[in-house]
Image (cartoon, rainbow, N blue to C red; front, top):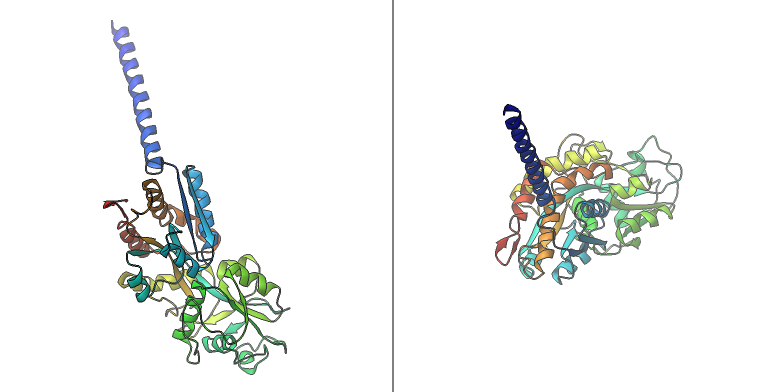
Length: 360
């Protein structure tokens, strides 16, 4: 009798374990795939600045959610914004936050900080590697055409250990509407007393050769001895293009590195708490790289204009990139978002709705 009861109890326990396993498996499946169970194709585009990281994100997210196809076109911040306004893009990448007038003309757009990075001043000078020193005023004079030779006395004065060539400087700058241009020119407007071209996604360059996208700047620079250009850190580092140390607000010549860029974004995080669109260049602090910026995902708050499965996919993907997606940042030379910025992103993402229903 005892043995029969024992066998019966064992069967009950066995069944119970199987039930628990099935429930846990169901919870895992629900957690991973609910909300993305319906197939959806999401089309996005914009800034080339974060393109390597966004490409990684879309690849990894598709592995987790095979029925969600997300494509991102690296077409520049301006084109990304226009694609969002026209609703041909389901979300846009932009290094340049929208202006007040754009916000008024296109109401209901959220700014989601996704990552950050450094804009480097890179050059092609045979025999001279990374580490040339430049100040904000020198950068301004070079890109305005006030300094036209590499061995100009003003450049030589802050680089006494370098033998600079008596060769012409060829400025290479963006030809498209660019958030990288916005960050670079915002820095110069903030940090240089001699910069006169203003700031924006486009400016009226008096000199130079135009190229489209960060990849275009990198490619043109590699083919142009004597060239100098501005581009996102990843593109210079990944293509072995030398870049300058830039004097920061504390008077230090700082090399752009993942660490010095991360310090800059950490120092600037409090500004975004007050205004997510606040410029964050030229922050004070030791070993802070001064040409560092946040970059954003732009998305309409009300996604009712698209089908529900796509709206769910957009919301879930954007939530994922500011959380789990940050694990892929540093390998691609982008700093992880500071915790305070993740909180801002969460607050903004929770405003996403579909027919009045919160998506997150």
